[in-house]
Length: 106
Image (tube, rainbow, N blue to C red; front, side, top):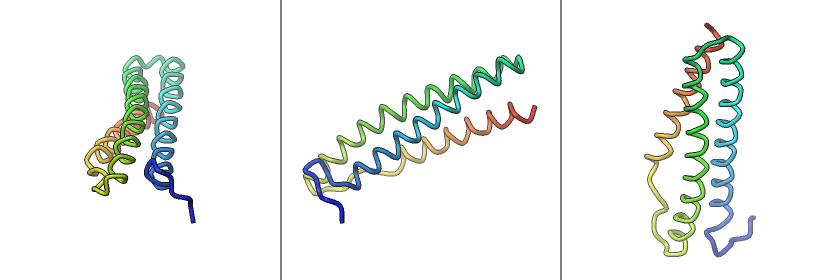
């Protein structure tokens, strides 16, 4: 069993680390998409690279904010948060992935 911390427990830390990994994956996607855009001279793909980079930075900032809010909620024994932000990030990541797939196929 994991040791419980005053900041909300091990679960909150694992969730925060998972969101940081997601942000790093999006940053890697942005770099690869930007590289493919340069090699294939596809100027529209720069949009996908910028979108992935922006989404990565947004997820990174949101994960730290969510960690603090979740730690506070656990200490106050109230529900942590809703799934709407996670759903929006998932949909945006799928859109960026579809744009990157289009770049590879075309």
